[in-house]
Length: 266
Picture 1: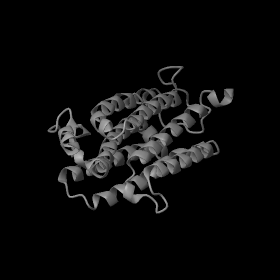
Picture 2: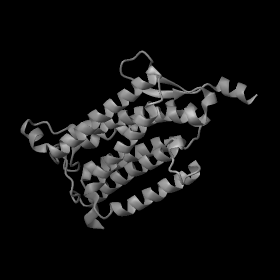
Picture 3: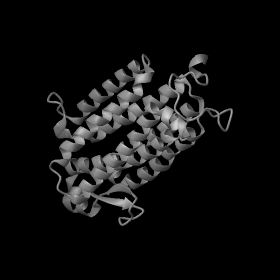
Picture 4: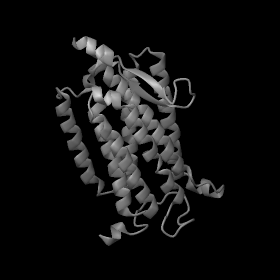
């Protein structure tokens, strides 16, 4: 047990120089940038609360898990331990599992799935199985998790085919752009470390933390919009931006029309 908790027991070492500023923190910037999960998650939890209250409070689980990702990410980069790496990757896996359970479109369920409860059971069984397999070869976990994004992008493309709303089209484009920028930083830091070391710029993985937090906020809002269109259309979901709709760089969120819902019930 001591070996899996030991500093630098992980097989993965990112490009940033180790113990540059502290004997206790292996990758300083990668550790500090993990705080982005604690910044964006509570904000999105607050902004999406009206939608969660209308749809299901389980939506908040996504953002609670994102904060747990932040905890384990900071622990991993601080220690570069095997256990830190594993906990970081498994927390991301379960964020994706919860997101699939909540927002995967009902009309795209496999033919043998009839309701969301059954689909949730399938997702959690798969996630549990993946959790067990993660212990076998931790070094491929991160690549496997990022490959799941390709399926998410495929589902997004399918949903966008029938969407003619310019605002939603812009949100979809922005979401993909943030993700592409984030994954470029992740891959560059992982695969082109020699180049970045030569020019003394080894901080792309810390940028990944910030950019993927922003991309997640956009992506969750986008899929929450599609979900609301199918599941609570009477609430007339609308996408707005915080701090303001006219800001060039802002966080998207979903608003619902409670007045419409009450009139519908009456």
